[in-house]
Length: 285
Ligand code: PDD
Image 1 (cartoon, protein in one colour):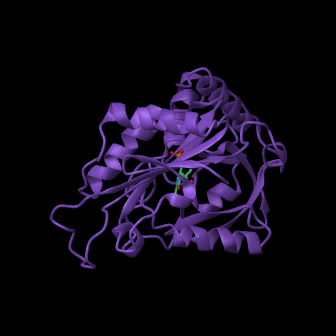
Image 2 (cartoon, rainbow, N blue to C red):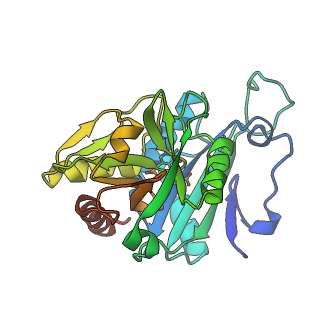
């Protein structure tokens, strides 16, 4: 890969972008991130990602190193510089380099970096046509999952465990209730077509795709219930799905050994996928 990346105000070939080994993002995982999808060389659902980024920055008591307009301009420029048609933009802000100390430095100099990653996700591949299998695992992440931090070791471990067991992903549970998938929001659909999605709290990330799907579902006459659901309820649901910026709406057809509904992607899931894609493809910026 020979990407041009952004690092603290500079545009650099990826091999030349260097961050200090004292960076708190590296030493403490003291950093937050965002992932925005790119389609047709434009940004998808950008305002939501920009708003959540601001929230994450505030929650860890940092200040954004760039203003709103500059942030959007950087997103657009990185797409242009890399001639990215389809894929994602990864953005990270850490508290920057400092002597190793659990206290935050008094005057942090945050590290802001962005890179692109090409990814074909808009075509309906096998995962969408056939749906995916997930396993269930206890949610052993920290208690502030509403902040999009780079502390992703447990989700990685869970993804590896899923792979080992022949599944595409893991649904995490806590006290019997599903929290979310390793890197996406979990939803189920009841036999009478209601969309059930866990309510926002510190237990889950406020997924931007989640918010959009709920709005679009309501606007299209699908009843939405924002409440926690158990693993048992998920296993006996008519349909299941995950949502994220890079996977959009992805049908889930098996949880552990239990086949969900007909074992094929369900009608509500596929309708939501279509509605989401149509809406956001028409509102790229
Ligand atoms: N993950 N929950 C978790 C734990 C996530 O990591 C993500 C996103 C989501 C969905 O959020 P959104 O709809 O805003 O993408 C839910 C991103 C894509 C990632 O880490 O790659």
